[in-house]
Length: 279
Ligand code: C2E
Ligand code: CA
Ligand code: CA
Ligand code: CA
Image 1 (cartoon, rainbow, N blue to C red):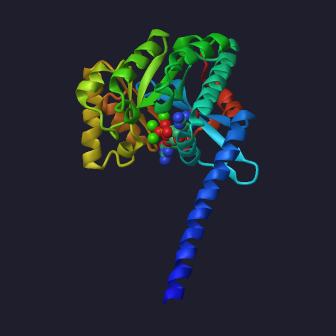
Image 2: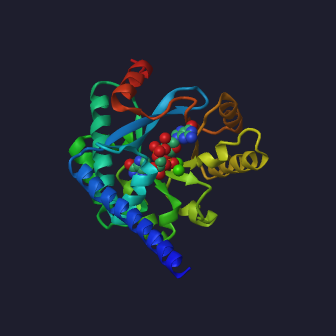
Image 3: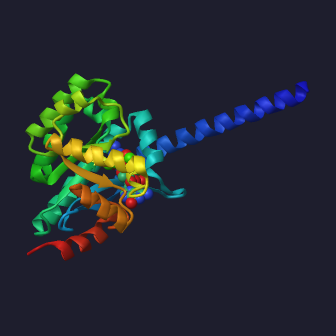
C-alpha cells in the first residue's frame, strides 16, 4: 500500500509538472510570436438590427502555432494575462487593427468602425491613454473609426482610476463599449459613471433566446436599462433569425454573431466591405 501510494504521488507530481511545463512552453512561444508579429487578426461584422446594414466589426486575435496549430484565444489570452504578455500583445493588436482599418479607409471602404478588445491590465497602466493616442497618430486612423471594448471585472479593482482612464480615452474621440455585460459585478451606480456609449450583452444570455424565459427577461431589462442611460445596446452571439427578430423587437441596436458571419481573416473581410460599401 505504501508503494502504491508513492507511485500515485509520483504520477500526480509528474502530471503537475507536465502541465506547468506546457504552460511555460506556450508562454515562451507566445512571447516569440508577439515579437515576430506572428499573430493575426480576424474581423467579425456587426450589424444595425433595424436596417440590416453592417456598421462595424470586432477584431479578434488569432495564433497559429507552427506545430500545435490554432490555439484558442481563451487559452492564449489567459496565458498572456497571467504573464503580463497581454501588454505587448494588446498593443500589437491595436496597432495592427488601426493600420488595417486606415488602409480600408484610404481605399474608400466604409465608413466602418473597428472594435478592439482591451484587457483590464492595459487600462491599469498609467501610460495607456498616451499609448492609444500614439497609435492613432502613427497610423492616421480617425479616432471615430475606433471603439475599445472593456470589461467590468478589472475595473472594479480600481473603479476611480478606471473612470479616469476611460474619460481620457473618450477625450481622444474614440468610442467605448462595455463587453460581456451582465456577467460582471458592477453596480448600477458605477455603470452610470462609466463614460461608455455601448453595452454588449454577453452571449450567454442570447444563446437561449427567444425561449429561455429568464434570459429573455434579462435581455429585455438590459436593453431598457441601456436605453434609459442613453447607451446603445449590442447583442453578441446571435446565431438564429429567431434571436435576431426577438432582439429587434426589443429595440436592441446592434447584433453580431454566426448568423451574420463568423470571424474572418482580413482578406475575406475586405471582400465583405467592398460589397457593403455605399459609393
Ligand atoms: P469576446 O470579446 O466575448 O469575443 C466574442 C467571442 O465570441 C469570440 O470568440 C467570437 O468568435 C465568439 N462568437 C461570436 N459570435 C458567436 C456566435 O454566434 N456563437 C458563438 N458560439 N460564438 C460566437 P474568440 O474569437 O474565440 O475570442 C474569445 C475571447 O478571447 C474574446 O471574447 C475575448 O475576451 C478574448 N480575445 C480575443 N482577442 C483578443 C484581444 O485581441 N485582446 C484581448 N484582451 N482579448 C481578446
Ligand atoms: Ca469583445
Ligand atoms: Ca463579449
Ligand atoms: Ca466573452
